[in-house]
Image 1 (cartoon, rainbow, N blue to C red):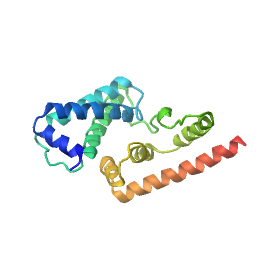
Image 2: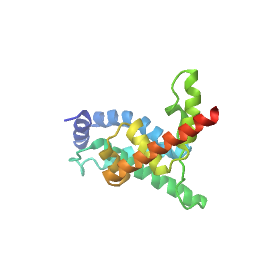
Image 3: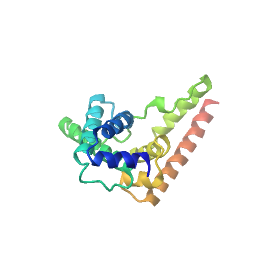
Image 4: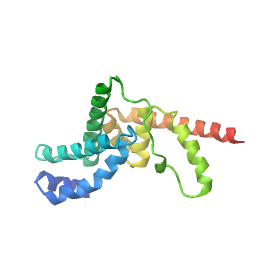
Amino acid sequence: MSIEQYLWQQISKGDKESYAEVYRGLFPRFYNHGHKFTSDSLLVEDAAQEALVLLWERREKLPGIKNVETYYYAVYRNNLFAAIRKQQLLAGEQELPETPEFSIESVIISGESEVLRSAELQAALKTLTSRQLEAIFLRFYEGFSYEEVSEMLGITVKSTYKIVARALALLKENMLVQLMLCF
């Protein structure tokens, strides 16, 4: 049994200390993930807090969750997108933003030579669809397996592999184009 599963079992029994530990660990991750879709910090914070409260409220109904990390992210993702949709409806917009923001701090590697590569990567990331960008983020930044990413995105594992493969191919192609433009 993983530590996440153990903590979830404790939470489902009403252990507030386990919940506090999970909350402290998940909130910064949710906050960072949310900023990939909106720059509205208050909306991201509210969505993260509401998702974490939902986890506590639903704890007794869902004691047998097998992959708690996937469940946590699915709850947060659904809550975040509902909040974004609500905000957009109030503003008169109809759809989710096509290209979510991707924080530069997640791709910059220390050293002066990496600054150029980071700018190239940012330009290449902007060419991805929001679905591709989210799949890449969950798979490589958060470290989820393809199966977990597919559950979070609500698609098949095969589709997840295709989305990630196409995204990586686009990134590679766009990075080469950017590199050629520099010379």
